[in-house]
Amino acid sequence: MNILLSGSTGFVGNNFKKYLLETGNSYLIFDLTREDLSKDETYLLSQIDSHSIDCVIHLAGLAHDIKRTLSGDAYTMVNFELTKNFYNAFILSKAQKFIFISSVKAVADSADGMLTEANIPIPQSYYGKSKLLAEEYILSLNLSDSKCMYILRPCMIHGPGNKGNLNLLYKIISKGIPYPLAAFENKRSFLSIENLCFVISELLERNDIPSGIYNVADNEALSTNELIKLIATASDRKPKLWKINPGLIRSLAKLGDLLKLPLTTERLNKLTDNYIVDNSKIRLALGKEFPVQARDGIMTTIKSFQGVDK
Image 1 (cartoon, rainbow, N blue to C red):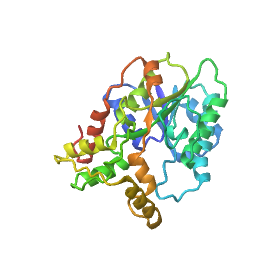
Image 2 (cartoon, one colour):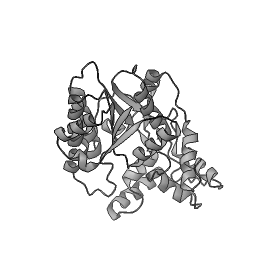
Image 3 (tube, one colour):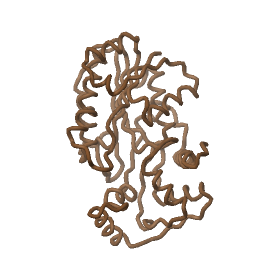
Image 4 (cartoon, rainbow, N blue to C red):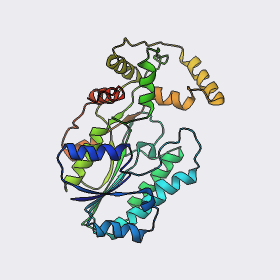
């Protein structure tokens, strides 16, 4: 099978190619750069058909802007316009499958209750809005019977090489610094990179999975307090969980917004809000369980921070 892969040098792309090698799948992968994606549909179509591509996997995109320096137009251009051109080329090509990595943030930035594919999208961030625009465009075009498309909505992905909030939390807890937010009770869904790679691989291999939108998350949601305990265990430390008054913490976070301190309202919400994602639709479609349990995946990621890849 020949695959055309955008975003191959990113976190997901690097891990996906490694996963294919380790599982022994004999795919021929052609990389597509950001510069390639910026060209017109005719060029993209030539890249697909000249390499006899069977499946297009679109990973490239503009992720969250932690420093808040990017405009909405920047997100729209990368996450929507480039996806639109790429999908148009796929529609005209001989390729059979299109896999688009969207995000649960295309639906909601926060979730009351369990987030399913049936939730009405109400994204608030530029990132989420741009991903939703791309989803809506993909869904608006009719597919021929010989083609299928999959929109995957992963929650927070983690794994070796991850440089997100989980890494930041590890750096704090592994130094023995107490965690002051233990009074907040929450549950959040995470996604091991191995489970995401497993899902993509299944979509490549099989022809019995219907086109559509699928949430992708580990089976179990974890609280931040559970994460702290796992990090402490991996670091051979006793977890230090301080239950400081939540009202005081929220006030300090608002002060952090003004003074640009490490603790901001956005970061506090990411650590303490509930965000539980239902993965039952993709599990039912696959008819298989994910290979990695949530806690095992977290431990693998934590150990990779220590330079000890599980």
